[in-house]
Length: 501
Image 1 (cartoon, rainbow, N blue to C red):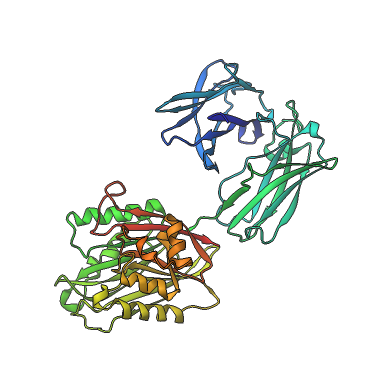
Image 2 (cartoon, one colour):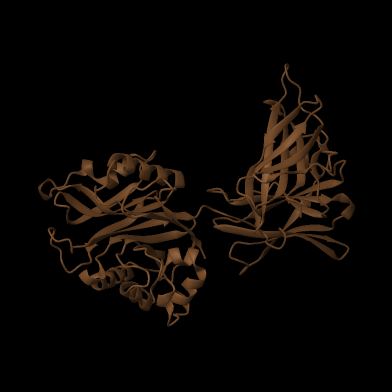
């Protein structure tokens, strides 16, 4: 496999009321070994002027291959002609040098308004596919490029929305008027390159994900495009959860750090944010909402989230200290309660947890708890037990998952962590996402030597997910480090994504 390879080029002229427009699309396969690569299409139209068109990452193919795409459109005007017929080559540049796919210097070509030209020798090819499902999208168009000389009897999309527990088959159809119907183009079907476009629609309704492959049948023979054995897959946006201990107004340059936290929430498009050591001025015990750190961060978001916060005790002799949940989605219900023996506002051992239920699109109801529990010697065991009992009372057939989030003041491998593992109710999601082998030994197999595995893991902030959850973690990363939004607290933050199983 070359480092860069053209899969197809699309050259279409549309004739709509808004005017005549030519659109060029270049779709290619690129080796993913280098992170500093730049992919360009160097092309020239009938005027002979060579231009450079940057390509953008499209989606992952396999562990060392990616799809990239470049697209550009031109409007016909009295002052400017359309590019018409084009010549082009593909270039990949990295710090190690550059490589080309340009037919050994002869360049590729594509005639004006010719539709699709396939560059790879395959009888059937999925074209124009996207890498994600849009919010509200219920019908997925499938366009298949078929070599007309194959003389296809049938083209079928085989698909599933539940990891192949149930399989559907949807036929694609050939119409000579395909290009006219799609874009008011005069491109022929099949075209001069021997390519015929077939079209199908998949009706997926409210499904979270879609996986599919395409078969072509001719005289008893079957040809496949299954994305090199990986199948094509696309999904909705995952549920994105961020957790962070704010350090109770003890940071230098505090105002700037609040802005950095808001920036991260916005740029990462977090759905739920769980905050600990949320502080506001004590004010004789009455509090001061204007100084509440969760409120300040929320107000700095382009669109403020729904907020639920409550306080536990006097912190640093001048603050009401507590916890908070920010949510992009409205709260179905919310609550707050002490999980500690002490309810004394003047005792640091008084620990209150806030809970909110949200309805996440395509995933259903999720219960979220934001907690800041005591150290092991100060009552962690009893507090975690009460938290689990409370969470259990909130569980029902309508709740798909429960997330216990926040600062639990137990190090991985410690006695407190041992308590969580032995409870067989909740799993450590950062470990599940980043250390699968260790996670299996600790939470699945209960290896008798499991405490040896996380000996160098010093986290005390977690997202614990109930074992009966209908969700699973798909990624987990550390935030607010020197390399990522900067230090904003004496804790790092954690950002995790979840999808239906």
